[in-house]
Length: 376
Image (cartoon, rainbow, N blue to C red):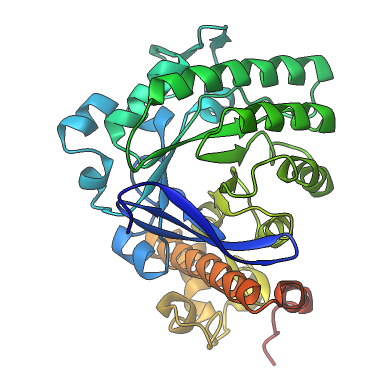
């Protein structure tokens, strides 16, 4: 552990990077996948389980926590780490994406955003300064700037306006964040699917000398090849010695391809959401437990897995739970999915250290492509 925030590269293999983020509450091994704990909980999981699977950090969300139970209340109760019983690092998203995706009524101006809660319609204001204040009340370790995220496709003029606004907000967030020992504020590169805008955003943020950088505004409707093209131009412009975080991404395949382009950190609701809807991620690819072909399949999802949910329960039982809408089905499949994601990250880190990332990525992809082994 470190009394200050620091990042060091331990190995590189092509553009793939293995590193460590050190801070007072713990060390984050990168490339890292951060389970999403939007409202102070990783859905369907005990946080002790999440830690045991290998997670070094989880994500919380400013928008949701400010609405319920309220940032001031969380602060009064000892901060989010104490509140949720997670003593390790926490990253908080600024809330900008949720304002875009969840709020039916919102008005964005230079000052910030005024929006109506998706819960009860109540009116709220969030400026860059207020976003940082809320994240400080939550006592998160890595705090994100407030940015404006827009859905793709969008006109270039609209992408440029949002990108420039986000840069001005980044400056205000940096000032509001100040000097907080042991913590970090990350800027967010915007620019939609336009290479020139992405480069301008990355260059301007790099000049601010922040402790880390995120790539936002992707996985919002664009094809994977567009996302990867944006990463190609963006990562080249970001400081080599600072961590890079791809927000809200994604599938295991997205992760492999993004690591190959120099990304260090990921988060996504996909493994938890998919688990609650009967979909399992495994080394054989995706397995839909709703399908009738699993009804009499006595085999586990993967007999070689170290995760009890993956190894010890039959597909027939999981199928029964999912089709019966039993809560245990979602719990077990979420457990399986998060275990697979953390196992994948560990494989990636080991492969980079051994100088065989590209080879291992090919082997993993071929395993997915071969697909699930049918019951004989």
